Length: 189
Image (tube, rainbow, N blue to C red; front, side, top):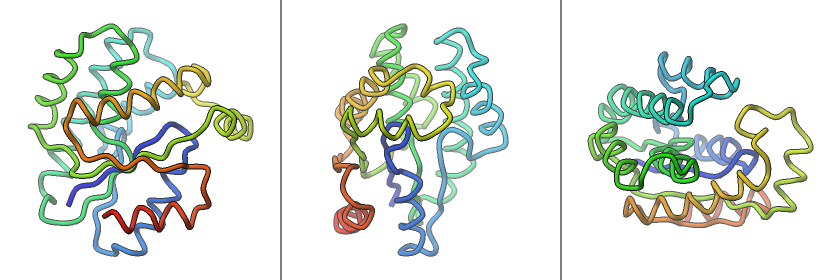
């Protein structure tokens, strides 16, 4: 089964994936962007705010997604695949950019993924207050520097993306304890 943990920066995706690793020892653990050698380079370009064009950023992420599906997901569809982000994030970020129409976003992502989407999405949701606090505790990357309101728009767009892609969504309050969140995810896998 191919599942993804989604959420805006600081929501706790990495923590939950580390916990899932202990429950699914044979799982393929992956991420978007950056799970492939090309993906690592793309991730660096975008997170270091080197890309000026939102369309170029979208196309770079599509390139990473296509490589990720080909190299990591397709060969392992018969196994448990746990991904830190997925096509859901790609669609959500593109929707917020408002530079490419929804139909094109969906078609281009379907093209990049060969129509392979996660079976379940676990979305870790943060309140504005909690997001502000968590961001204040770290050095911000290029995406986080876009601000709290931008990240909250992304969070809403993640929900919209799962609907557009017709993927089962489980929204989880990311302000709960780490243990409560992991238990909720495990129960719904």
